[in-house]
Image 1 (cartoon, rainbow, N blue to C red):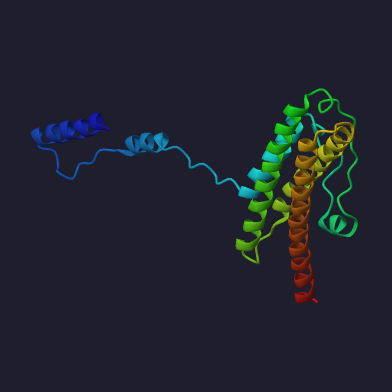
Image 2 (cartoon, helix red, strand yellow):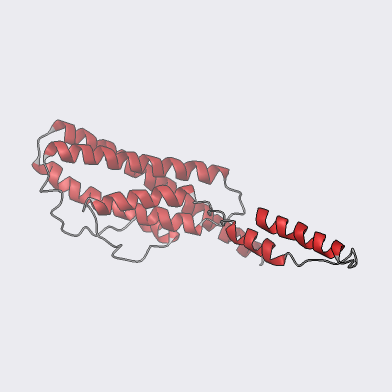
Length: 204
């Protein structure tokens, strides 16, 4: 940019020296274009519900506690509310092959992720505008809930074979956290259903 400015000054001096009209202009569009090319695009804001739900899903899959992919398409909000979250637990050996102490640490770590996802969803739901569409958030929560429910089923099998009281207590705490996650997921479904009902009434 400094070079461009010096060039403009030099051109102006040459123009004056040869007696050309003072209104003679120099095209600086290329300089502006170069400036714009250096400006980096702003990073899109990550939805906190999406972020925490994805983190929960990822950690369960990474530890081998649930399938690499959700076996079934995400259930509708109405289905979850009426029938609950259906869970088919595949057979995995990751939980059986680790020590009780390692498993305890893993359960506590996953429980933190569940609590974070739940809290983020609760705060987002309260602060979201009533007109805001929450389908994407509900979808992320459903996938996370289904994933952690699969993990819960695997953990339950291991807990029944292990007399470690610390494991049992951690598992009970995780169950409580999962129940809270399911509740807030249901709350999102209720919000969406009410919005659909209101829209239907306004057009009737």
